Image 1 (cartoon, helix red, strand yellow):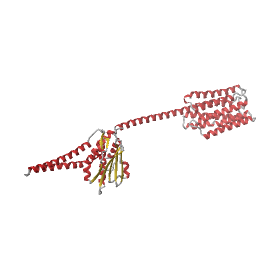
Image 2 (tube, helix red, strand yellow):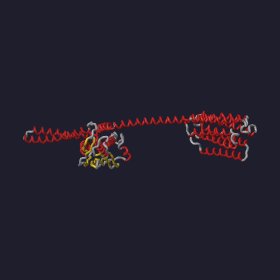
Image 3 (cartoon, rainbow, N blue to C red):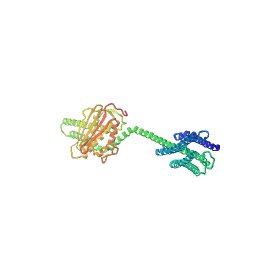
Image 4 (cartoon, one colour):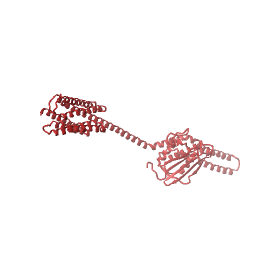
Length: 494
């Protein structure tokens, strides 16, 4: 028994033990299933080498059985760990390598326990690992495409070193140039042990380098993901603040647009207002001249005075008519602050009709008004007047476009449960199917001189009152707008 060779076996076992224990301890912060598999596999190989170096201490049969088995398990475990660095190992490869190892074990055990020599077992051992260690070369090349080049080169170099040194040992045994006994000291034994010491160290260093590189990349990806999430969260908070600002300014925007839209619509109403005021003012002038004429005639003073009184009464009525028009205009174009009040929607509609009436009359448009009962609700009178004005102006414009027929606008109102409903229907040109989706869209209009603000603004005002504004239309037949507002004591923002 050559104690020196046995000591080398035990030193080799100690090397396996120290390297893989160091990996287990040093990789504690990165510890995972792969680190555990690599470390346990190394410990299995350490025990296997220790058993192989214990012939004479342990029965030869136990040395062959356990030494060969533990070495195969340890080597297979390390190969699986390398194959699993980028995810679970391929099932086909896994079953193929497992079958290769099982066949080797069965052939070795069958040969030895059927009376084969130890020299034959040794030849099978070195021949099998010469082929098996090519897997380290292939794993190193595959790892080089995705991981740290230093670690992949270390694995490849260790694989080639094992293949070459084990191959030399195998050829030496076959040619009769080397030691046939496990413990004989010869040049080929020195080659194998030197290769083992260097290759096992390189494999362990390469695995650690690759694994740490993998964890570092994963940490970078996690940090980048966290940075993206933080940036997205910051943007969401900013968007939320911007949205809150927009919502808080919504009422003021609506009020300003209401005033702007009123100013834009003033041109269309100037003729109607002038005509409406011109009638009573002209009558006042004519009747004043008649009074002067009667007083200047040389006739019965009593008759002249009676005629003057009669004409004065008519002048007073005309003056009241003009004052009423002015009051209505002052109310409609007042720059209020959007304060809510209890109001009668029916009376509000009548006030607006006084303004658009002359325009409609000149265009030969008749109104059918059915507002017999009060339509009480809570809202901003100025804003709601603007809504009704927009709807009536749109109806008049639609009827003007469709000339040559009896133009009519039907206005009706009713109270349904907790809702006040106002219906404005015309028999004008209607709305084309391809334009219906844009009826309430800002800055979209079919009118040549339109701004595309009126209906969008009207819908916004109605929505701010908790109501609904909808329409039904058929091209060439007419349009019906339905305004529904809550009849209860609605408070802005509730």
